Amino acid sequence: MKILFSLCFLFSNVALLAQEAGVYVVNKGEVATRVIPENEQYRFPSFRTGEVFFHDGKKVSATLNFHLLYAEVEFMDQGTPLALDYGNLLKEVRIDNITFLYSTKYGYLEMVTDDPSLNLAVHHRLQTTKSQIDFQHGFVNLREFYNRKTPGTIWIERAYTPFLVDHNRQVHPAEWRSLRKIFPDHQRELKNFLKEEEIRFTHLEDLQKLADFCNELEL
Image (cartoon, rainbow, N blue to C red; front, side):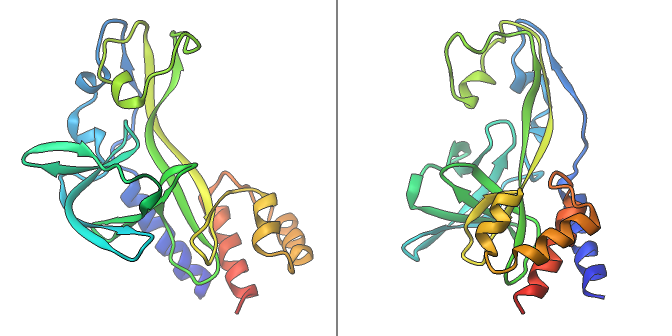
């Protein structure tokens, strides 16, 4: 029963994540932010009241949205969207009851589940998946790159990279090495479960089964 409930919870969140998908082709000389419809560039259809939480326990309210191209949270300042930039001070952001953990290594990760021992999160973004550009000739940040004329054709589409989140809200790549670190006393049970259930670390449905199993282990 718990697994059925968890899977329903997972799919409802994934459905919320899966807005109109597609591949956007930005031809040479075009600007990505002008080719991709503005409403498709954001996680939510409009900016809305949210909260920003800091590691020192403080929090502030602001009008927020998540920009999928820039992979960053923006706040509205007198009608102008600006990047939220607090660096290591930032802990997490909540928008419309959705929590985004902030990791200095992985950026903003959207929480998909809410369990006591092990949770799932995804790095949800629009990213360049194919390109005619040689990116080795200098690096620019995403905001600058997607707002300038591209020197070659690029293909942009939605991407979801899953992560594991432990009971301390620490973020880990979805892989066996992370499981060993999070559950050092249950490696044998985990190995058997991974083999029997043929768990794929790249699939959210499989990871939800894994998370359910791990949360039962820790009860």
